[in-house]
Image (cartoon, rainbow, N blue to C red; front, side, top):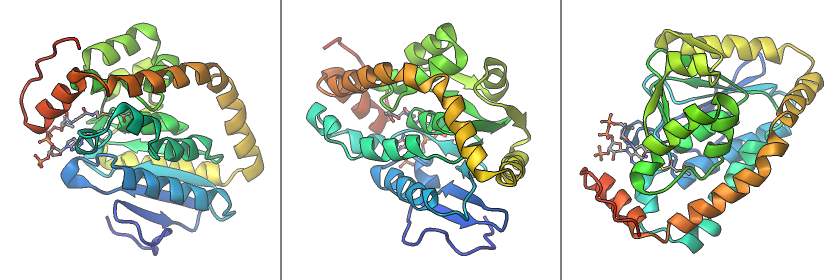
Length: 267
Ligand code: CAA
């Protein structure tokens, strides 16, 4: 990606950051070889950048993208291999997710390609989703013997309804961009090469509005659901941690890394 502006945040390896003259901060997830898998360092870099942007009046709206081909294929599964239940409970990732959740300014996801697991949860932390026709949304954690752990079961259900959310979470199937738009997960579908352009144009429009009103508008809209989700998100997190004590989680993660089908036993 050609970047006319200097990096907004120095010292990042996994993301690119740039602030334009219209007060729009663009964060590009940049681990193409691992399908933009959200390793802990990457989540930390996003959280740090949002932390800086929170108190920077020059930033009025954020666009979060994974580039042309993939938004993010979820948590980095290689990091999950040796993680225990206690490790999940003590995981610094929870703090990074909290920072992302609490970011008070409008944030738009520009999604192309796979948007899976923690990647879909990250997109759902954004306030508006714009998707390229090649986008595919899913919560395939069940294939690893686990469940979503960053609010996916709750936010997805709030956004697309129980039956469709159950289907994605229980079967690991993906939702196409068109189906995601019909279901209410995304606000617009476009040609993949236009996704970032459209998200940026919308972000510039939002950035031209009164910043305090925009923040309070975001906070108000979130009040319609976030408070109701809090208990479910806490439950999901504990269930997610518990599943890290199962043999099926070890089997699911090993099978992914060995590129074979898992053989789940129920313990
Ligand atoms: N973590 C780590 N590495 C990943 C990854 C992930 N989530 N997704 C893909 N990769 C790696 C692959 O291991 C592979 O590495 P090598 O080249 O070294 O073999 C590389 O990226 C390319 O992947 P594929 O060859 O599989 O590419 P593909 O185009 O055929 O398939 C895909 C893409 C459908 C995204 C497939 O890679 C896939 O299913 N990935 C896993 C998706 C998933 O299960 N996500 C949920 C993770 S758990 C989670 O997200 C929980 C949470 O946050 C709380």
